[in-house]
Length: 251
Image (cartoon, rainbow, N blue to C red):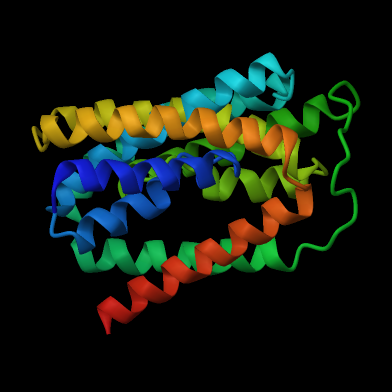
């Protein structure tokens, strides 16, 4: 498929996923795979696009003061350390196993979003009252999320967003904070893949530009137009659609 068409698809995906605090690599990897792009090229490209989309969205969320840096810091440190490790092990795991793991992750994350209930949908909890709990959660889970993110070519937002919701954050603040965390784990995983040499520079340049613009559009829409509950529902539905498509292809 022409790289311009692929870039257009990435733009629309970046708009959607930046509203959810994700970079979009959750979809980019299977998308590239379906388009016939080698998995070892798809994974680092997806991580790069994930980081760019999340960075673009995080710029908007920072300006709107929507990011909780107290909870983000331990996640960032731990996941950034874990992501290159996961990237290293990618070459030792079969493509089929990677796709089955990714499908399982999508299903469970979708369940969490669709059936998490509506209470505290727009709450913004104080960071001072739960700093210790949030730091311990970030450190204990951040490293594991980083490893899995680097292995599967995803930024980790699929895990981080539900965790922040479970900690009591409203969907909008969870999305904003997740975007900030994801940009670090994504770029860390990408740099871990650089040593493999599996890169398509032409594909990366065009899609990176599309991802940045899409991230700007999506983040502004999320802040001004989207309801918190709608964000979670969109997130859950998209995850299930992708899981079904992946499983169908593996059957």
